[in-house]
Image (cartoon, rainbow, N blue to C red; front, side):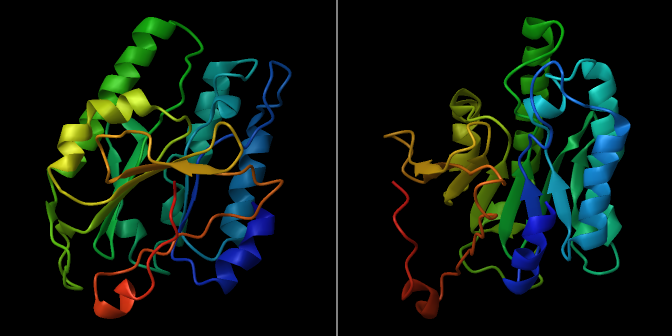
Length: 247
């Protein structure tokens, strides 16, 4: 986390998202409150931009006491972006799902950003709890999408038009995104999903019938710097610099 600070500052980042696994995995993992607060304070003291955290299995499911780990995670990261309120207007525009405070969404620069708890495991009743969480995640994505409409050239004051959708979670979860494909495709915009559970970079189009959808897995922080994503516009200047092929 701290190693990323010079990169975020020097590269003109406007916000940062961590897609989970801040703790070492395994049943001997140290999921004490001190460990979560240590990382929370690193971000708050050193990160120059609003930051968002999503849970990974290492941060919750794999803890010796998952309930305690989850409570510690929520206390530190459930609404971490409010720390930067006043330095930018972004924190005040963040939406949180009432029943799942870890899920977030915000509209920025004509782009919709969505974060969801997409850990693919449960510490207790796997079938019932996992199904319930996925249903709540699905309802959150659908609820957020209904607030916006497609516009390739939104004005600076337009807070309901979108030209792209970016999502963040911990696991790959292609089945989940299939379940909301129709809702996303109604907007007819590029959709990119970033996750990190495998801790090794790749980018691909996973579905042959969904050409506007990409999935990318990020490297673990110990072996690579954060990924900087630049979302270009639809002006003639932007079209002169096409994005690199992702798959």
